[in-house]
Length: 383
Image 1 (cartoon, one colour):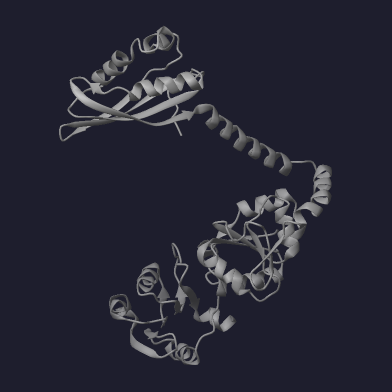
Image 2 (cartoon, one colour):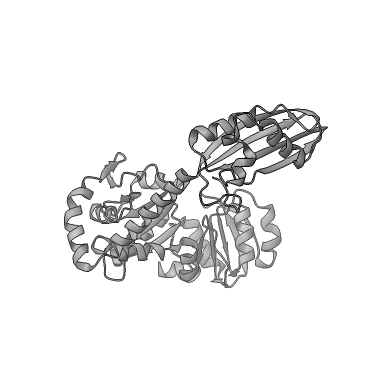
């Protein structure tokens, strides 16, 4: 990609780029002098650089250089409005220069860039964007026609992935992000909008294929705006690494949304961390019996207890010593304490790779790490 500059006139077609190495220290005027001096008269006035610059068929030559260890290195850029053959001759002439100033030099052609090709690419990308927005902003009557006609086409784009045969778009496996919806009808509706990195759950149990996809991709859960969507979201967050959540409007299903509604809901997706902050808790894991019993004993004691993943007690201490002594704890999975869960405690627990924190209350938090589940005693009573 060539940076735009006043050097390049509107008629510039090509940019010749070459690099040079000089056996000595030279300055820009030496390079300019070599270019004009050693190419002068080689091919007659029609291809003389000075004459070509006067007629604006060759632009101002750009030179960058640096000197180190008694050598000079740099690059040359020459804008050309000539045809391909003439531009190639100019490039070959530049490459033939063997001295710059009093020093031996070697110039090597790196590339000849077609600015019109870059312009064509930009126009093509802009045309795609215009067409996409045009389709989304179609009138309702046109939208219904598109929906009916595209049912035949888009349905054929639905693929099956994984051992479960999940319905998905053709880019679900290759794309860097994935949109997870509830069923096949939702997949088809997103395909009609040109969204191809979509996969359907097809049931209430989260398939292993979706869990695996979420490990290496940015994952967006796009679910119905009803209780069924709530339940699927709760289970999805327990087993998969979800980054964002988008929902259909209350009472609506993803499969019945218009293209404009789909794009709007996806634009308004919420990061999972923000969702946790708003609700304090989204996931209530199943806790070992020993931990549940300890929670009942801890109320009113102002004590903290660390457990490993199996529920075995690792350490017990006053809450006042928690921030200091947590640094000495190893292999802890659960932290339960009769106190307030603060941002400092969360950050210390994340550093020790603790996965579940249970406290009496939650203070105002800036963020909850995605790999920590936060619970309160009252949350567990409601579970």
